[in-house]
Length: 406
Figure 1: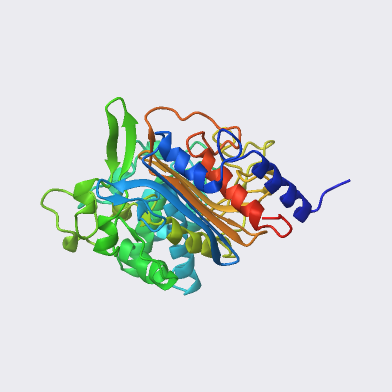
Figure 2: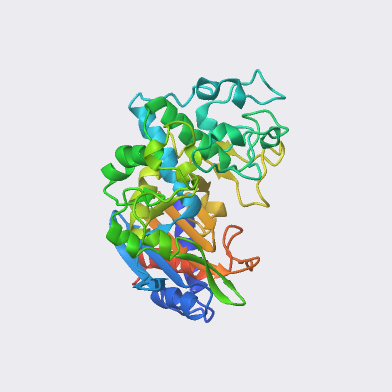
């Protein structure tokens, strides 16, 4: 006898809750977050869970930097979760009639962005957001100012497959996307994202600290790797947190006021440079996930056709911005998730909307040990270092279910 979606979801949540959130299997969600830090795995950890638009759980532990504790409202570099904000900026511009996501890249880049093996195949702008553009990451996919993004274009950035036929996760595409947005609208990407998305959403997040209040920046989290010599800062160290204005890669004599809009969309790290809190990420991921265009599957792995590089099962379904985990293949068993993972500079993060529960979860650890992470039995996209946070999210969702007895 088959199970309907509601029954499958309930059983999946119950199974995750039964697994416990800590090594002993009986830790509370709060204890699970605290234990990540107490074990020495991370300098800080946090989790926020919302249900029906209301926060039902928020807990953080550890230190953000030498002077401030980590809180669920602490700003952190959220890594690839940033792609949700970049994608939604593009989609909102399209809704306003200010850009055509079906227009080819040649509209903004001429023949410099045509696949050399398939020069007659046009590449729609939206394919950058679903990682099906035929591009792959070159060795370096960021350009310090005052350089131009075209300086990064090389034959090695093209896949053997024709554009539109194959998925390969590509960070570089997001710098190209941001450049196209700048060229079309005539506004610097960080300011554009704030005007179109972040400001109206009511969050004080920003790309590379742009538009983040100075007081919140001072309390921001430093991302670190743990080595034999202890925790080593990798991003947002004391000098950056004490700074003013956007933190960008630039030459020693370059003034950001002299930046020529449309020359270099990588400058504000649209693929990973959003500074946002866990509390900020919940409304952001919900907004993306309920967007009818952004959240629809744009690519689904076909084992028979081998139409993409899944990174050993890490990727299976992608929208135009968010990653999609079907209920049958989810880090929260039995629960469909729409959102994104993040990993950079020691940080692991995630922000997800569960449409069948009308819920959001956002979690992060702000550092991790140097070297390869031990795998988790929970899911391919999870490792043992931040697994307790994901399990804690499942426990909270289980308890929020009607009839759970909690």
